[in-house]
Length: 257
Image 1: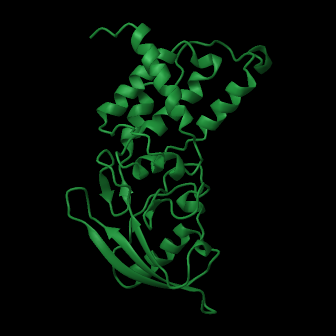
Image 2: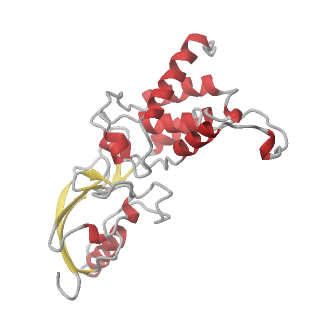
Image 3: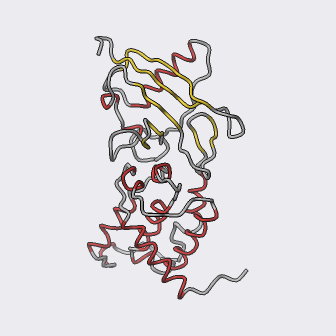
């Protein structure tokens, strides 16, 4: 590495819209500090492109703290890059070698059409949440927390499922582009708590239907979703969702048209 920082060769996907044909474009950046985040490196590249009169690369981000799920990029063949349990915005350039070729792509999924360059439309995930990822029953005034006993295992598992930030890495990693891990996490973190019980069966049926209607693929137990998840959400929640779904299908009355 030079005293001035890292030199990197970048191969980045550029595409004007979902209707246009995209392709990779090669870039070079210099003077990159190993302590920069990956998105800061892209900011430096965009400054260089703008100064040269070009159009900056579009990429999605917001919090840059690893909690909003917007920053997902496919980096060197892995969602969010080479470091496990890490979002793209929390990935630092010290994870790469000086002079390394880094390939950067958007999520690849039919349900995630490309908006521009590295930005995809993930509103399909919002539709799954809208189908049942909430508690709508009247609960009245907020009771004292200790008046509702929750088994420790249930509260712990609920919190584990609630860590899902909806980035879509599980879908990008899955060879079937399945949203089972995302949907299972959203179903489980409510279904494990007492407040989520009244709508538990309806929630499982409606959210799985919304997932299927959005065009996501089915789960064939590859396990890539769990490996790619930046929050380490476990596939055990998929098994739990399947049990809820089967039980609801046997006992829940279908909604009238």
